[in-house]
Amino acid sequence: MKIAAEEAIIPREKLTHYLLLPQVRNDKSRFLAQAGFTQANPDALEAAIRQILAENEAVQDREDEYGRSYRVAGALVGPDGALAVITVWMHGSKTQQYRFITLKPNKE
Image 1 (cartoon, rainbow, N blue to C red):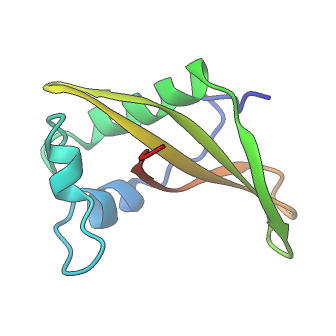
Image 2 (cartoon, rainbow, N blue to C red):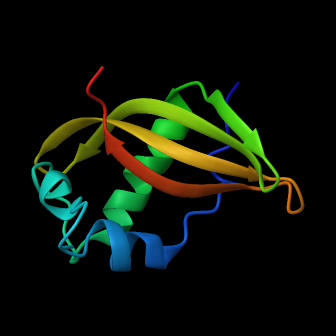
């Protein structure tokens, strides 16, 4: 199944205050910088995440009281290259919307 890229919710703070912000633990900003994603271009990161949704199938991961989580793997294409990633999404049982949770390097 595919998640509708244009309808998926990607909170701006998730990009600017988590993924692109250097962290002491679980820092993803250095990984994303390899493809040219920085705090100066969060719109490019959002567009690349939506492109992954448009091009790849979602696979259900698990289900709990908050809803179902899905994984969508693909190439995160940035200004300086591409990274193999897995994006994680939650389909809320109450909201019935797909919400971006995080991404991680695809080591498979």
